[in-house]
Length: 512
Image 1 (cartoon, rainbow, N blue to C red):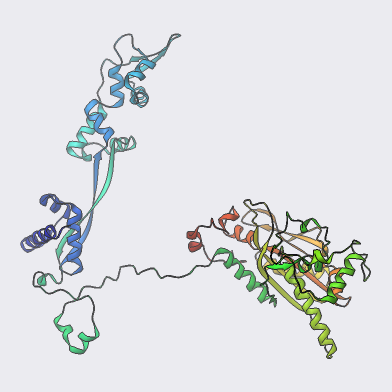
Image 2 (cartoon, rainbow, N blue to C red):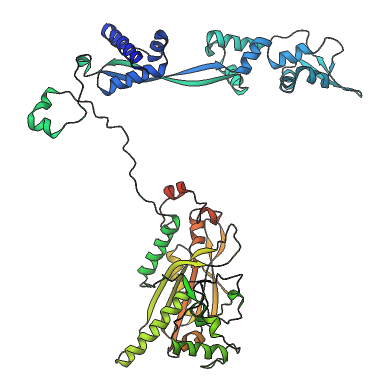
């Protein structure tokens, strides 16, 4: 409000408070002063902040007649207009009545028939509308007139509800204030302004005794603190990582998004003719297109295993290409990380054996992003996360794998596991892992597992009795189930709702 109007409202408020001690309703004051109620509320809030006045909020329901209701007051209700348009005696064809009244005919017909003002007769020539009564009383029009002149109290609550449902009247809540004298009322107009803060200078100089202070509003909300939020994927990832660490696993280094075909495929005893190595399944890197550094002895051993076999295996028996093996790509699975880690373990065992030590068993895991050239849909993306774990020791069997899977998935809250034989190029035997999901009320596939083949381990330099049991699963699938996300693009990618990231609940796998 302009300053002059605010001063006038302030002066009028003080005048009334001086005389009667309170202003009963700011809405009435605004009407008497012929100013907007918002201007009065603004002045009251300013005076309240200084401690000059108190305010108590009041609410009143205001009823107004809609534009359609005003038209009914002037011309009669829709049903009355239909009745009046029907001539006495022979009646009128319905099509002619609709053309005569326009848009109001449809609603008016149904209301008039419900009120038994009219009746319909179907003849071979046309549908005729007849008056059903010699005269009618337009109660809707009378109710609207009464509300406009005397308020909603002039009609029953049931009638008011019907009018509101027909959108002939509307209600709104009007908020206003009752204003009284505040603690600092005596200083209003004295030129002294209540201090907002108690400063160190006031305390040291003792001038705080000469001041009055604004009241502290302990009910006001503080400012939202600027902070980061964990994405649901990261929350579930943290839970998986905690479970692995609790089970004694150590994390592998997963910082190679770009990998060579050698570590991604060949080291895993995956033949170079395998469909997964085609362009339509794998993202090959254009620059740099080839990897320059591969361990020569191990490269030769892998070549021998693929092309001619060894250690009791016949191999794949094809002309293995080193050029194909050196092609760079975006890793298609985190098992490429496992192949590098296993090779490092084998080299460390050789070195330790030379120094009088030898092979040491271990448990390792990785959780990171992989890339595949797949068609995008509600459950597949070109990049996603894989969770993988393996245990290396002597004489591990399928029974050890089943026991570890029961323990691992049990910590995720999945019990009653079912296992189904499957095929993987680098594990034998291989098993799909299925579990009953309480939320979905059905059995779902939750992972893949197997025992790494000797054709993968022996070229690295491991002894014949060294075995590796391994399993893996995606990070996105359990996250989608946990947070009830139906489309993976709503969880990961540029379409993610930031509000969802801020508001998603905590994740405690195995406790839900």
